[in-house]
Length: 82
Image 1 (cartoon, rainbow, N blue to C red):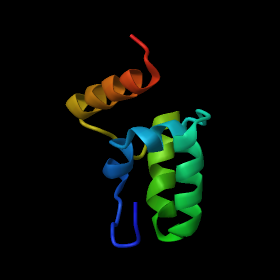
Image 2 (tube, rainbow, N blue to C red):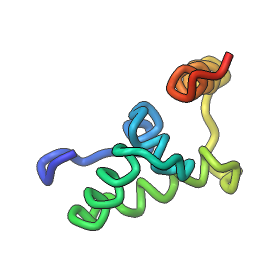
Image 3 (cartoon, rainbow, N blue to C red):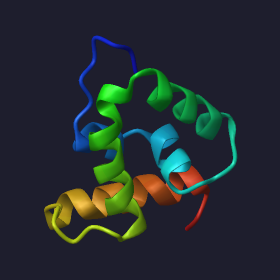
């Protein structure tokens, strides 16, 4: 992420490194995203929405079933879960 990119909720949900950060998985990705979100605070709101979706805290924002399945497969692959 850089200051010229305006991430939307969907962008965060497609970023494996952000997913690790949002799910509090300790890694380089977690440290990287923590730093980026502090530096580019303009994206914090969208990042918080994405995190709420990933952690099940948000029922206001929904994904299409196909997109939800794709996201689950991506998360499982990132975490090496089958």
